[in-house]
Length: 217
Image (cartoon, rainbow, N blue to C red; front, side):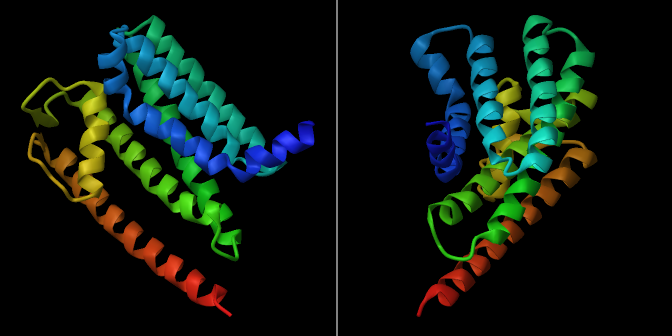
């Protein structure tokens, strides 16, 4: 029974992780529908992302660092929920979150390299990598704002979620103009994220086409 469940989780792990990250990105909708305290929903959705993301570990060598980083990030997330005014805890949460999602990306790249033919994991993996890139960008922008509150100008309030929103519209080069990087540091990180996002898409498309051609008889 346990072995069968493990095989199912391994087969659909990217789908499970994608559902969790999409659920996290839809946090403002959950808040609007339920009317619950925003902090409660954010911490629950972020916890689900971390727990689901731990499925990406594929052997004993990767399980230990994945679970360790995940556990430390979870502690920091819940400590920030309990003590929202602590700058030290917030910085710990940002640092551990960056390390965790960066490590997720590394594991994802190694796994995708091993896939020899086009299947569900090969299709969902690059999508997950793109979303992880957006989350990492959001963490970067949060760190910049933490270090310098004048790093960004927004038409509305600058909540933590707005940095993830800005990260995704940056890597997709949409640029609505409602959030603007104001300091040189914020502008340079935005430029870097735009470049990485475009190169990521180009490389993924090239790899996908190459796999498709090689898989044809």
